[in-house]
Image (cartoon, rainbow, N blue to C red):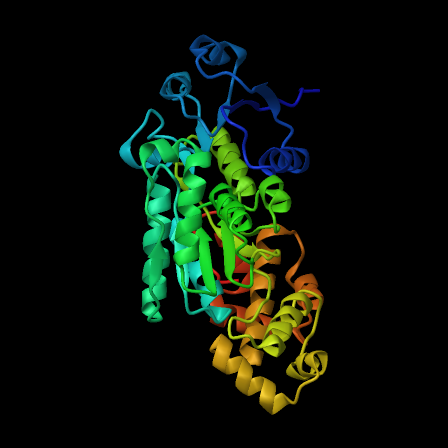
Length: 401
């Protein structure tokens, strides 16, 4: 009997990755391919240890968040397929030692568009953006697209100006500067921060200045880091990103088995907004009935069939009155909001579960699979099965939560 050959994959970790990356890697390996892993969490700066992998018989390399040109140079010298997860923006745009290898790239434009449309749909009139302190390119991109998306709806965006170099390096010095800026903003105001860490600092400044969140200021971050989001005061709402681990590992596996498979950029897309207390469902016009309706729709759209009548009963208001007030604030009808939430949930299940389209149809409360297929194709331009398969080769369309 011929012994089955296990592919040998080196996994190098430079910095702590996002929380779900390592568990998702192990889940994929258990379910798909019993790779033999070589794990080194502090390999960078030790070029020889990586070069010896060729003698070990290494078939491929996964690098997570490398900031070391030396490590990338060493990986390139091995001559085996490499996929870099979460590389720095500069490395993937201005050239680095893995330019002929595969890597992931976050879709900053889709993230910013999702943030803008979410806040607009909540009825805000005042908006602001807080960028990364080092003015990294990814932060600049998010600011540009967020501002542009708001301008299309005739909204202005207040930009937090970069503090002095000394303040950028010391939060104790920057916090009073940010407090002063927050006090100057028109209220209520929706603030989009470049990432969760920056959003946490906005919340800290609001807490120190007794600015009510979310009544006066609503804050939204990016990455949905559970440690940051759940320990913030109040808990932080954040945009959830698809880490694309199944696509990444499928691609690496294909490259190791078939040299004809070309390296490529694998997109990291926003999936949804994890709503917590920092945004909540407070009506920006003071209309608590509309706020209750939005909260009810957001919860029930993930639990099965929901109708306009269900919403009306939940908020104890006449249908005509609720429809009028809802459209005035949210800018579309109750039925449109229900369908938007439902179809986004369908897309989420397609991307992140192995449920069949029939199971998804039953879970999301659609009367027939045919009705769901028609609505999905109208929204995303592809049938459900084709859309699920295509995510391994092309970026999916951005969806507003």
